[in-house]
Amino acid sequence: MIDFLPETCKNEPIDNTFRIIGKKFTIHILRNMVLLDQNRFNEFLNSIEGINPNTLSARLREMEEEQIIKKNVTKGNPVKIEYVLTNKGRALQPILEEMAKFSMKFCCNEIFKDAKPRTFKQVYGSTLPIID
Image (cartoon, rainbow, N blue to C red; front, side):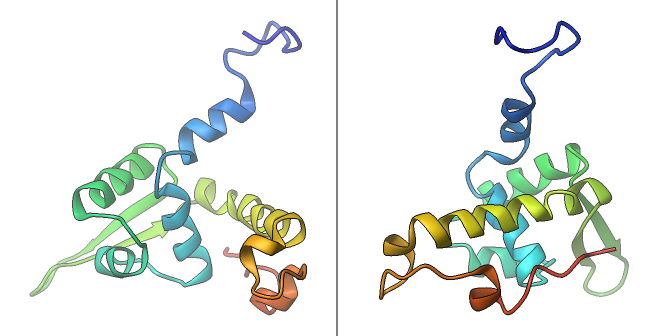
């Protein structure tokens, strides 16, 4: 345990958040849900480079277990499955925005062809939409 934490803490808070969203591709799924309004398995599969169906299934299941997303199944032919952010998942939205802002300011040479910093608004048009 880290020395500066109060005795009331079981885990270090940043480590705990990273445990929830730090696995490979989890943040990409969240990004696509927030920025691209994606909510279907094949949308994620086709837009996240390097992910395979087994890994995607595992990450979606883990995100459900952590109550970051909820799986909605609509009966019909064919059955329609969509994933939606829960309130807990929506609370991660500012973290995504701050991650983007950090890279656009401090890692612009790795992101932009002209290596010039950009604001979030310049890249995404505005702040991320607040999802209620």
